[in-house]
Amino acid sequence: MMFAGALALLAGMGTGLARLGWQLPGAGERAADHGALMVCGFLGTLIGMERAAALGRSWGFAGPLLSGLGVLAVVLRLPQWVSPLAMTAAGLCLLAMSAAVIAAQPALFTATMGAGAIAWLGGNLAWLAGRPGYEVASWWIAFLLLTIAGERLEMTRFTRPSAASQRLFACVLVALAAGLLAGGFGSPVGSWILGLALVGLAGWLAQYDVARRTVAQAGLTRFTAMCLLTGYAWLGIGGVMAMLAGPVYGGFRYDAIVHAVLLGFVFAMIFGHAPIIMPAVLRVPVSFRRRFYVHLILLHASLALRLIGDVAELGGVRAWGGLLNVTAVLVFLGNTAAAVRAGSKAAQQAGAPLPPLTAAAVPVERNR
Image 1 (tube, one colour):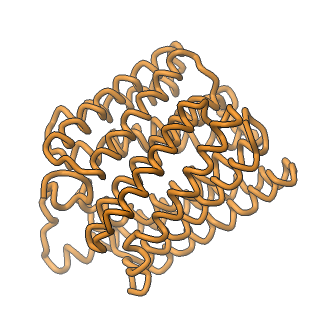
Image 2 (cartoon, rainbow, N blue to C red):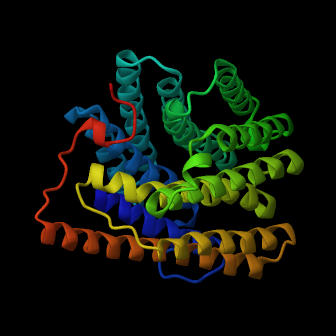
């Protein structure tokens, strides 16, 4: 499953560069699968593994296994219906895991992540039915937003948000659902409502997330908080652009909105959470290094360059921004691998065993 997730990430970055005009062997032939590889193949597989580990039931791993098979179907160029069918089955499995979690622990944050599973299943069904890419992308973006928002909402138990703030969070979720049902980014009304929901969610997270407090600390805690807060800024920017752009079906405006959210917000979350989740899920130690800020700064700077190219409709500038986006992710992978090696060496010298894999070690939704 980890191999399939890594393969999806590398293939997804290659196809993304091909869409921007870079010539890569074999990538151009699968350029249309860029979104599916990144959202379903890479992120869907990792989220499924995290959720299965937190649930503690072996059947849950069927979901990331199926999404991994969907990745192989794309890479091996199997019939076009194979991958969306496998991803749809993976979405059903994630929904079943979410239902089990909600039954065991009814709460707003578990319901939010359950809604994310529904959004992923809806997007996969739309993909299987051959719906336009912008429509599918709207559901996939909602899947990632709801999953991340639910996990961050769970962490707000440390700050004890008021009942009014939780009602405000629920209103944002209603707006997000309304935007999807109104047609998503391909509809004038849907795009405006979705943009408003993105701005509202970014504002809520910036106001109530524990990162506002932990950013004053040091080390990994501060780095994670910086990733979160800068990610929320990109989420708000994406929302404003969606409100101003109107319906988008592709091209520069579509690229700007989608990547402000999926790169600026989602990958900032990945950069911040990877050093925390990897030791819990994969049982590998990660030693924090200040060089982590290199890939974070490169991500934001390259995304800004890409969006400048989108706004000015300069394809060359956008292409170079995209290439630097990929570079930022590769630097992240390299820095993380080096941190794992350093952490493993330190653990061996200290003679400390790795922590057991338990639900309490994974910052998601199983019973406390």
